[in-house]
Length: 285
Image (tube, rainbow, N blue to C red; front, side, top):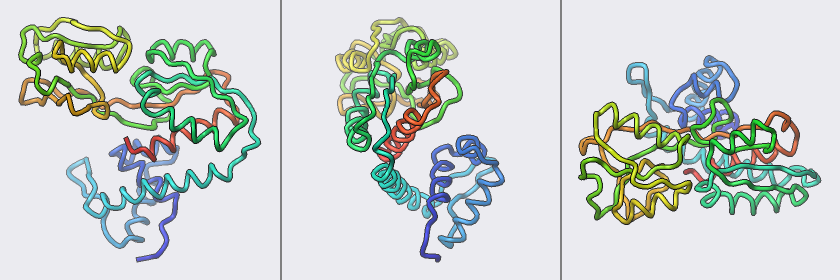
């Protein structure tokens, strides 16, 4: 085996593994599918073992691929941190950033703390609201950058979130007929996917609880008042996932992506977008 693992190849590999698609990875990285294939072939030559195993038109990581992905996360995160440490602290400016409440509460404090240390002269103003409201603000040019989930197409994907049905670990709400649901306001993709899935199954339901925040929805589920479609990474010890064999159909995987405003094409916005993307990769949610 060669002793060096080029950062560019590791970044492509990690993108392929996360996207579960050579084609989608090429779209994210803005390179052709053939270029992705050539890079992955080169990486397999370097580590001297197969990283992908095909199953029809799909593929999954081999044990060696899974091991390399774990190392790649750490290497890429360390590389991004090193670049940031020697980046341009003289960058000066103001950035208006929109982020949904649940992501703002879970991830933004550490991201902003580190960013301010690296770029003390960039002022980041945060707006927290449901995604569809943030998107309207972005379109009106009232925000420079937004972290959106399931609201708009395109953008730079920084995370993929499996959406699951959640119920209280000791509750019985999932056994009721009609099903009581706890959901976000109108316009939320989680809400739309859940209702469409139940309608396809001809399953009776009613909206028992509506909240603009993940904390409110979790509280309703934890109290046994309802079940809810939530992101898997937001599950805690008081909740459990309802499986298809229990009568709850699989829900889509949601893409969390960064979107720039109409006039936000500047170095400050690009710098913060890169920092957020690297931070999500480092967090590994």
